[in-house]
Length: 323
Image (cartoon, rainbow, N blue to C red):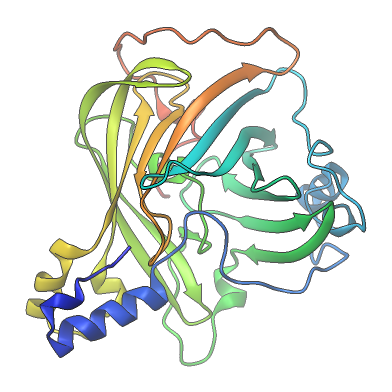
């Protein structure tokens, strides 16, 4: 994906293109690669639960891990999505995703199959009563052996570095699941708006503007649904805060967007995504291909009928309004 067409040719736009190519946040695999650790680096009941669950600590980077070892508990609904490249139709990945609850937090887990031998396991810890992400970890495996891992924790006081600007309290890591774009809205409704703040360096963050506009009836492999259309676009002012406003106004129209379709009624499943997941990457489409409850028969997809929206708090990890 080109953020800006080089045919525009001006030095300012070329510089902006280079800056965005460097800073555009990922919504798939994290670009920050750290050496895998063998221990949790913090205490507390939540950390102990995550270690016991196998999401942090030695369980994530053992010498041999299988894609089927990370399974959701009975009664959990699991969605499965498939992402394809628009130009060739090649399948890029297939993801199983679900939510688990621990105290007042939601653990969003994704297990991604990349090829016959490679897969990823990632989780995000979302507080139920405020915006932002508390903890994130991602690990890449090949033939069951951990190759790379990234860990992130949101602690504004500890992460504050000398000479750096204050980070927002509602911070997310540089990698977020698609569901986060619905979570930042005040409610899953037409006209709702929000902002995702993603940390991209120890000193800086970038924002993505998110807004919902319109309902559509769409069909995906999992069935036909009434869908809320949500768009997301990098807030160029957070990428280049010192640039003149007139320059930013020229750049903004050509900054790429992601278009997301969420089921318009509970449980607001992700139905479809169109766009790119990183700068320079191909245009892709992500679709919901199935969903089922662990321990129950597969759910037959049926056309959804638009209804009054239930409060998002009980379905997307609590209130979407920051304290």
